[in-house]
Length: 377
Ligand code: NAD
Image (cartoon, rainbow, N blue to C red; front, side, top):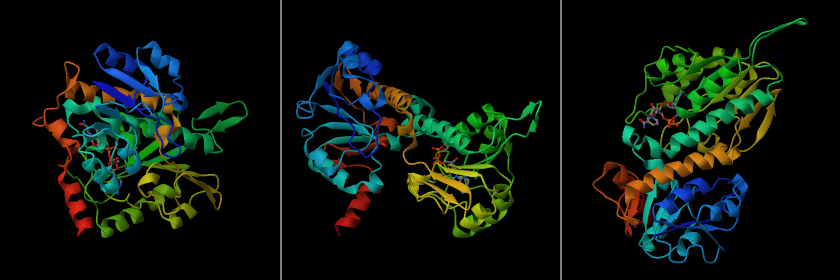
């Protein structure tokens, strides 16, 4: 089987789907790995590192030739799908709900497409969980971005010149990214408080040495460990209750998300205006619409002396290790669908079926199939 690794084409994307170490593992398992020349450069993996591991380096024009499988980070464009061989198997983040033209193009190519963002979050699939691995990078970078922008220390310092109190960091949303932001800020010595709508988050927050903010609100558990979509009334009440916490913080890091929905609004302009000059808001939900009213994805704005930074595609900001982890996730998924060097996905397996969007040209992911029908009529 030939696996092609094209260069990512999304604006600002620096990750690569397969790193040299994983290319070597695949070659060892009997897979021909073809990497587009320069595909790993932005993540600091030169072409020679791939050839050293037994992969071939090919031009953009030839890398896809004869490839039965293609590994990417971001979804291809509909034009890029046209260049894939008929019946190809694609593994990437697809986010099908927002990529209907790509899904349609993949179906026309009779492709089979696995979207790692749809992978069931069960224990057996943890090693393939690319959402988690990339959220870990986001949370870490979010805390560092805040520390860098804050004109104060994170840790407490007792010096001969005087004592500096620790920075007060508030993390809203304690999923994978939020927990990593908490851990990183805590390691830097900040005083960390956090809030999440899921009941399970309280213990996780406390186990990291942070305090859990108790709000007089009912929990909002959805399925699969996620939060459910919250009503406008709930969010309005939440904003009312969290206002004083935000105002008292030097740093607010927001990570709140509900799968398939626009990110909930947690921090309003009025709340930012109550924060002290020099405070920082880092919005890790910027790509999903933002948790802060002032967020502009990819931009850092100064609102009355408070910095609001909407981090766009945070994992791409640390491309070497983000690619390493993503690549391991892809490898672990491939071990599930490749037997004796050949693609043999078992569609009775809930992990395989759960993240399959298109199977040999048929859109098998129900919500996506329905959306396609609606847009066609
Ligand atoms: P996510 O990125 O969808 O959301 C981030 C966080 O925002 C979640 O914790 C969610 O509860 C929270 N949130 C949503 N609305 C909010 C609001 N209004 N206010 C405050 N917080 C709000 O979630 P995620 O980080 O991808 O995962 C969430 C959880 O899923 C994890 O913490 C874990 O429990 C579970 N999970 C399980 C596995 C597994 O078993 N393999 C893997 C990963 C995650």
